Amino acid sequence: MKIVAPVSAAAEVGPLSDAGADEFYCGLVPRSWVERFGTAGANRRIFGNLASEGELGEVIGLAHARGRRVSLVMNAPHYSEAQGEALLELAGQFATLGGDALIVGDIGVLALLAGHGPKLRLHVSSLLSCRNAEAAALYRDLGAHRVVLPRDLTLAEIAAMIAATPGIEFEAFILNDGCVFEEGQCHTIHLPSRLGGPICIDDYAVEHARLDGTALSDAEAAALAANDASYQQWLWYRFSCGFSVTDQGYPFGPCGLCAMPALAASGLTAVKIAGREGATARKAKSVEMVWRVRERMAADHAAVADFAQSLRGRPDLCSSGFMCYYRDALAAH
Amino acid sequence: MTGPTVALALVDLRHLAALARADALTVAACGAALGWRHDPFGGALAARTVTRLQVGGEACERLLPAPRLLAAALEFAQARGLALSLATPLLSDQGMAELRGLLDRLPAGTEAIANDWGTLRLLARAFPALVPVAGRLMCKMVKDPRLPSVAWARLYPHGIHAAPFAAMLARFGVRRIEMDVPPFAAMADFPEGGLQVGVHAPFGVSAKGRSCRIGSLHQPDAQKFAAGHRCARECLAYTAAMTRPQGATDLPTHLRGTTILHTHSAAMAEALLAAARGTVDRIILSGDWH
Figure 1 (cartoon, rainbow over the protein chains, first blue to last red):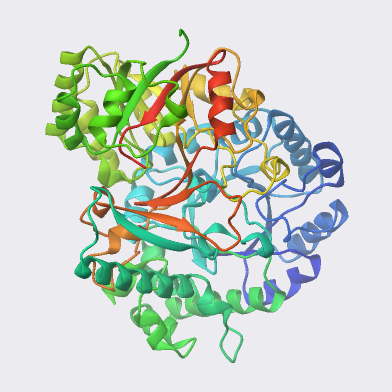
Figure 2 (tube, rainbow over the protein chains, first blue to last red):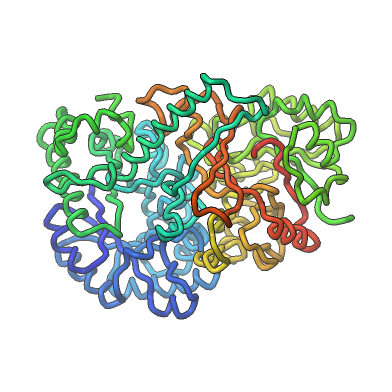
């Protein structure tokens, strides 16, 4: 399985390659985009982009010199028609620079690029919510080369989808991204923190009520309060255990390391480390963790889960299951 | 008043029993039968007759109707002279298999509303006698209930008007779409052209998850909030109001099952009624998912 890592600066290509990354993905908001559309929303992460077309060319050159592919994200949740045309132009520039693949989050733009774009690989973003084999077959039929699966799938679902859909590659999340809602079905904005930030960690209070209009019993109220406390705990795990790292710099938070043997056995092509907006050290340590587990798989397939859980030195956090992308891996362990 | 037809959306088909006791299926009578505590459009549609029953929903595959309840809905619709649509969510392969069983039961010409591109492919491939509709979660737009101004809503303009999106719909024979009313809606938000447009009211979907907070209520800790976790369909018994300290100008927001819903403002309702004098030909009132 290939390790796919985020970059937001050309200077990251070397360290992340050295840490074990096989492919890179990055974003760019062309100056012409901002001038034309009055928004920086060319992709999903406004603050994790390369500075310029020149830097994009630099990333491609550095990556290719190391035998790595580069993908460019076009993963805003949706685009207007004029923006789709602008993306077609950007795809042409990316191809001219020698880029390898586009990661696309809008089905209309995907079809546009497949029909009228340059000869580049097309990867279906997790924004397109490929949750079943019918959808995967559709994306394959449209000309896509790879599907990036959404987060909330089980290992069994992933294996079945891959088995049922030959002719297209699959990539799955392995570290760091903590969306609570399905990316492809979340219609909100990551507002600045002064306005609330992402809606899933905004400072909401919830007040439960029965739909039949009757009052909650004491037992119901207590059960709901306990469930809410568990939910808050899960959110803490989901958002990197309070955005913390180990003494060695390994990030806590959403993780599928224990599941790597099962993912590999199912025929998965690549695992994705999320977080273009993260610091370089966080990205490098993330790549290093995944690479170490993959190396362990080659050496001793049976003990991978124990090894993966030992990396951060906090088996208590792992055993909760709340850090897992693929909780069925923990159950199998 | 001519203009849009009115559909009634029901997720929990046990509510058919209450509707069956209503003599006439006006909006007001349906609201009374279903115990609405809201008054959509300030009563402007109260006397309108519901002509379509939309069963199922986009929130969760565990809410696909049981075959016997779908059969009851078909029988009810036929008896009351209603057209029927089956609304479906994003689906796992297991959910897709369940859906096939339901689609097999639908008479030719019945609308099947997809919120999953895989479902549209399935409909085109295996159920050509049904009428495919693109659901509101496929017609994406920014619907954040917290937006302080229209400028934020324009950060990511929607592509419902875009030719490539229309071409994708045409590829699957889709002639009808459904959508929500975006915050700060303007007439330009509602498509003009060849597509028929239904709009949901008076609640919109802001976000939907697969993990379910209320659905984890009776699960052991090891299973809570996991992908594909079991549930006891607690979403059919509970709802939750959501409030936040800086939310003075927010749209009223609540959590129902997997879904964050918001209530339309008066301005949004007015924008929809204005659009319904032109491009929108159907208003889909939420019967029980709010």
